[in-house]
Image (cartoon, rainbow, N blue to C red; front, side):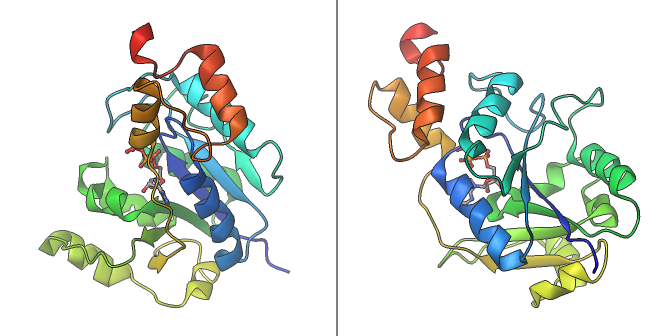
Length: 217
Ligand code: ATP
C-alpha cells in the first residue's frame, strides 16, 4: 500500500480563520489523504507583519486544530534557521520524506497570482505538486510566463497527484467561505466581535495576548 502524499497548506494565518479550516478539511476529502499539515510562515517574506509574531500565529493554528486530529500544526518554518522561503521548506520536506513520496503544496488563487515574486518560483514543482484553490466565478488573467508555467504542469484528474512525487499543478474549486484574515483583524481593531469567523479558542488567545487591537498599539 503506497504511503499517502504529504499535503502542506501554508499561510500567514494572521489569524487562522474558518475559511482556512474548512478548506483544509475539504482538501483532506478531495485528495483522499489522512492528514493536512497547516504550515504558518516564520518571518514573513511577502507580507508586512500585521501584529502577531510567528510564535503567536503558530499557537493560534495549534489551538484551532487541537480537537481535529486530521489537521496538524506544522512548525517547520518556525524552527528553521533558513530564510523563510517556500522553496527552502520544500527542500527540507523532500529530504525528510525521500524522493518518492508525493508532496502537495496548497495555495489559494491569490497566492498563485503573486507566485512570480517567490524565490525560485519555477523550481517549486521540482519538489512538489501545486494545488490551487480556485474561487467561483473568478477567471483570473495570467501573464504569458505564468500561463506557460501552468499549461506545462496542469492536470485535471486529482488522482494523478498521487502517481508522481512532484511536477503537476491542479486548479480545483472548494466550497467558498468569504472570510479573510484582513477582515478579522479589521473587525477586532474596530472593537467588534469576530466570533463565528474564527474558532473561540483563537479568539480567547487573541484577547489574552491583546492582538490586533488598535487601542493597544
Ligand atoms: P490576509 O487577509 O491577511 O491576506 P488570508 O485570510 O488570505 O490573509 P493567509 O494566511 O494569507 O490568509 O492565507 C493562507 C492561504 O489560505 C492562502 O493560500 C489563501 O489563498 C488561503 N485562504 C485565505 N482565505 C481563504 C478562504 N476564505 N477560503 C479558502 N482559502 C483561503
